[in-house]
Length: 136
Image (cartoon, rainbow, N blue to C red; front, side):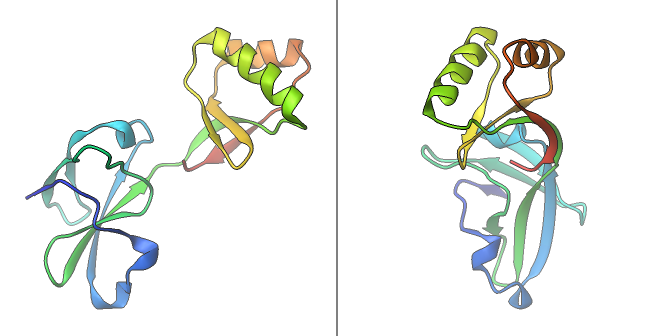
């Protein structure tokens, strides 16, 4: 079976009405438009998302009237930066842009993979950060 669109988010589904199969993906896999997955029940599925569709933690696909495939995301250690104000956000964004590392901005925080070079730059520039186990 090949899914081409996310049908719902698991938080919006009455899970008591369905048999749930899950797949755990890395955060990198969420960005793929075509992916083959194997559920916790050993069933294989293809996901080829239509334009404008994106996988996220909790994406759900209806297999049939009684079964749902739900996407989970592995947690990972990330650098988390919580800028104090817009000035610090701008300076931090400029510094991180120069490192050419992919970032995600969510809820006024900047997330990026742990990298010793980035940690050194942040420390030298006295930009506060933490390393946290996060699911994006």
